[in-house]
Amino acid sequence: MTNEIPVDQLPTTEDEWRARLNPEEFRVLRQAGTEPAWTGEYVNTHTPGTYACRACGARLFSSETKFDSHCGWPSFDEALPGTIRYVEDRSYGMVRTEVRCARCDSHLGHVFYGERQTPKDTRYCINSVSVRLNPDA
Image 1 (tube, rainbow, N blue to C red):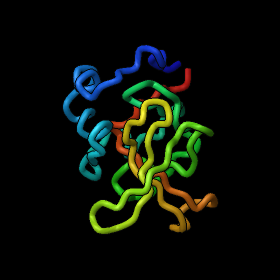
Image 2: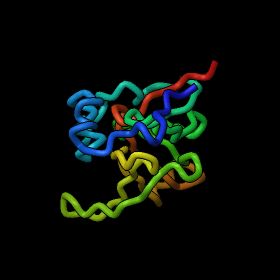
Image 3: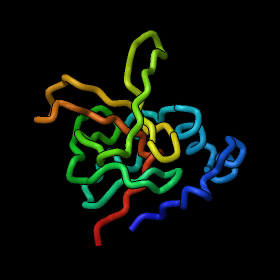
C-alpha cells in the first residue's frame, strides 16, 4: 500500500512543497541535494517491498531490483516502467543523468550505466530521504 497523493492535491509551488516536507526532504527532493554517503536509512535495507517517492507517494522501485553497490546510497538496477524522468546534469564539472519522479518532478538521485555491477549494467543511485519503503504484507 502506498500513500500516493492524488494528482489534484500535489503542491504547485515550492512554498507548498516546503510546508509539506521537512527541511532535509525539501533540500534533497526539491533542491536536488544529496544526503551524505552511508547515512540514509535504506542503504543496508533488504526488506521486501516497494520504494515510493517520499514527496508524492508514487511507486518507483521494487526491492527485488535493489542491490548492494557499496557506494553509500541505496542502489537499484531497474525502475518501475514510466515512473522516472531523466535530466542531464552538468553540475560539479561532469555529465551525469539525474533521475526525478515522473509524477511530481522531485529529485531522487542519479543513474549510471556501464559499471558491470548487475546483468542489467545499470545503477540507480538513490537518496534514502527521497523514497519511502512500503514493506510487503
